[in-house]
Each structure stands twice: as C-alpha cells, then as structure tokens.
Length: 232
Image (tube, rainbow, N blue to C red):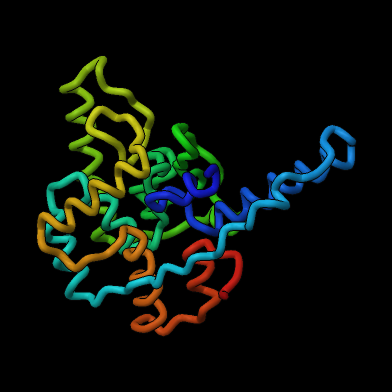
C-alpha cells in the first residue's frame, strides 16, 4: 500500500519509488544483520516495476501557440523557462532571483522544490551535473524583467501578507507552489485553451529535441545543458 500510494496519480516517478524500495530494503537488511528483526519483510513485496511514459516533443508552431496562450498568466514564466532552457519542474519552482543574473543574462540551477507525502521542501538538484549555469536568450531575459516587476508590485500590494521566499515562480502571495497543484493547474490551463495535450515535463523534452534536431548539437552538450549525468 505504501508503494502504491507513492505511485498514485503520478506523484512520484516509478524510478524514484524503486529507489525508495531499494533504500528501505537495505536498511531492513542491516536490521536483520544487527539481529533487531528476524527477516526483511520487503522480501515478500515485489519491487515496483519501472514504468515508461513516452515523452512528447512539440513542433515550434505548437510551442508558439502555448506561449501566446500563457501570455499574462501565472504560467507564462514557467512555460518559457521549461521550453527555452529545458529546466525540470522542480528546478523552476525552486529557482531564486538570487540565482538569476538579468544583467549578464544567465541563471544558475542550485536548488529544486520537491514534495514527499505532505511535505514540501527545497533540496539540491538530483545530480551533481544538475547544478549548472545556463545562458538565457534575450527574449527570456526581457520576459523575466517584466515578470520581476509584476511580482514586486504584488509584494507592495499585499504588504505583510506577502511571503517573500525570493522565488522566481511562486504563488501570488509569494509562497512556493505545491508541485502536484502546479501540475494540476497546468493541465487545466491546457484544456481550457484547447492546446495540444502535453505534460509540463514535455516542454523539457521539446527543448532537448529542438537542440538536437534544429541546433544539430553534440549529445554531450545537450546532456550538460539539461543537467543529465550521461547522454543515455
């Protein structure tokens, strides 16, 4: 039931849940070794199967359509960050203004927002390679400057009710997004505007596909850009 609940509604990927299974099993094996328990109960529980969700890459016209629909909404900045830079959802929701240099035109991925059961917390990116410096296109820099100005105006408007966490993408009152709520709202945005049916993560797939196809870049360069530890 524990593992089924973790997999329910796509809250965690099967890869993450399998990692939790292995970690817990290792801990229980150590308990057996220390004679704290007689056997590892996980030996009676099958490791969750790896589930492959096929990624979808959009055509440039579809991306433009989505960006136009997002203009002026809460999804404008996160959609541009995902499609233009290939950032993960957690990296976008954890991105701080302190890690964005609008003058020199780059940002640094240093933390990500995550949720396990009911707890929301900030953590280091999933791999050492995920901590990276990315230069931004001029259009994204201009968009973030406008986004920053609107955010500051909202901060003044709400006064003490604004919870300043220094986040680039957050709720209107400055609080971090619940990742699952963000995903749900994104799907509602897609359906409401009759846009191509995609997951938010597919914007990252699209970025890598465009880099590989239109940019004709070496896979290692694209892997480094996306924060992957290998080109696989």
